[in-house]
Image (cartoon, rainbow, N blue to C red):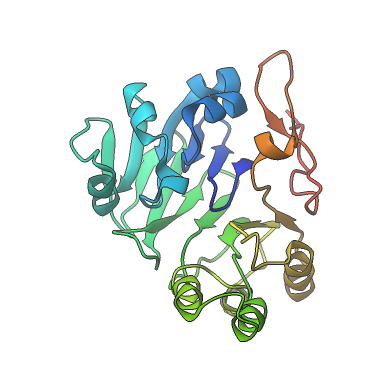
Length: 269
């Protein structure tokens, strides 16, 4: 599957996943005008939005997508929290119950975050198995034969402990972070328990501005796994890390200064 990351972090999240026949968005956490800026005319190709949870940095444009008649797949708890549970375009999903959109088979799974009913997703087409997990302090599921991994790496305990010691962060904020977001240390532990033999690439998502080190995180995960690691750009509109082909008016992510996350600008047909 072809992955485009337009925004990743507490200021907003937007990811596009494309198979041969199907275009999906994961999250819609930007203003609709920014989403249109990113997607251009290709917004008409979006078949559905997969939504992990209700926090605004993930769900900001949900009402606009519903007004366009685009299907939203999310948990009942998330739909209620967003106030959209009665929409005919909202489809309730449950952990470990498979559904299909186009030629992509999707299995939601439970995550652990301070939200009503958060989920992650495993997506499968005829070529790849992609796992997506963000805003969770741990992962209870192992997935065999994944070829693409998009996973949160928000902070490290080393950075948080140093800031707590120096009074740069208070204990309540510290506790909230470690019980709601995935740390570098927890990610490494989870990776060590998985079969990574089919994994081709790892995308690190939702890095904290204050409590992460993108280059260090990339180096540590690459050294541990031997697999290419890419850091998701905070917001391609704000950073200017995009190109806009005149043929489609789509805002295509270009190589980022943050560890060259967008290394696949052009697809081979």
